[in-house]
Length: 561
Image 1 (spheres, one colour):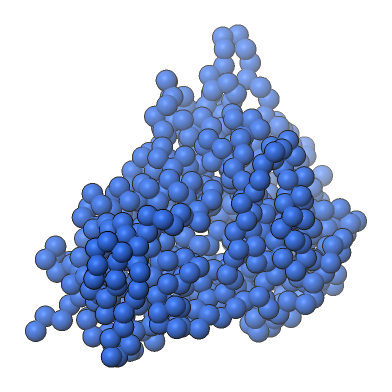
Image 2: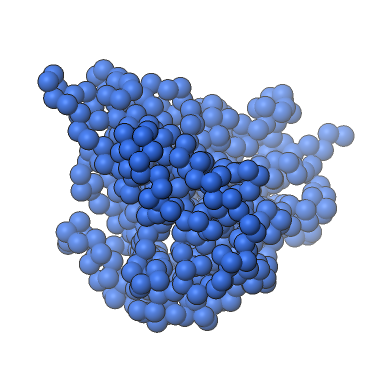
């Protein structure tokens, strides 16, 4: 008897529901014939709006779109997307003189230099006025100069540099709806009135407001923080992370670009008095928000602080408040139900991991795709994998707060001293006082490997402000000329990159098909895109960077050390 699943029902739309449908449909099309694929059906309430605000993603996203056969040009046009080269953290820490510092966590890693991580050379010798990220990648400079992620006229998904996207989450869900329904995913717009279980505790059917009984073989709960099936019907406990993370509320506003021609290719996370703000620059506007702790600010107090930070951009606006359920369900897969997206769990959006976690959750489910009688061993293995993913993200987010050193507000003191941290992170932090993070320190990494931890520790300048005192004297012996020669070559490459990369807005227009005449090379990097006759191109100012002539002649090299 054929015991294959004949139907998978997804309850809930938005990014979680429609990404689940897209990835499953894509994987089924690659691995099975049409007659053997489960039918996909998505039930979406017409009365519940998507939580989505301007959303940021991580570098897995381009590959997901490409695998699904979605045109990058269509994606940019339909979601008003822009490029994201990393996250710029502003004012999270202070330096040894008490000045607040900024640093970028880029979608790039330092190269190995003579068999060792560039981070070791940087910690030992420094690099003049340039910080670690500025020394290993162009991402900080590209973002500051509002440059794009690739040259004009390049093929879709071309990646010279690691990148992700900023996107409008509501428009993204709308685009996925069109793609999936065109490919055969059944779309039911109806309200789920009740969830019925059979004698074994499996979901047997849903009762819909208009269409009545909807039978279930396998159901995926994408109902957001409500957890309509996984929590309310199946009673799976929720594991609260409030002992680990201080923030439990957010508020959001969409604002205009201060200068529509200058679009930063970075997400910004700026620390305020009781949390942090995000800034996600899309093609047509900027998505902003304030993630904060209700134990340290009322909604009104947070709104005042947030609007003051926005300045003129926020005048007369009323931010909408979004309560956040921080934590995860004990098990994402219970009986014949899998919770994906906010229904499965949520760790605050500091590193833009929500879509990344949806992507992994769906792919792992497909790998464990059951028959109609679900084998318990499949559920057990899947749940173990998902719990590792949540642990990975939790540990990395906790790192940002534990290694903060601000003392100007009680929130930052409490976040550093009163919040729990996972045991594995505590053990690593004890080790990293004596050496930099190494590959074997991180047991599970889909996104945050040891090199990302190195970037945060060096970006926060923790080794200059009391953490790991004397670590430079304990580092293994390193040869300064090796670092010097590597950086000399890297500077030349960086200068050339910054001179030839187009500005971000021009690149987006090119991808969207809105440029009258595509430009290439040096001309594309300058403003205007093509210089007027007789007008020399404007000089390119690179932060803390010698001129190209000074680099080529070598006259500035020794001044860096």
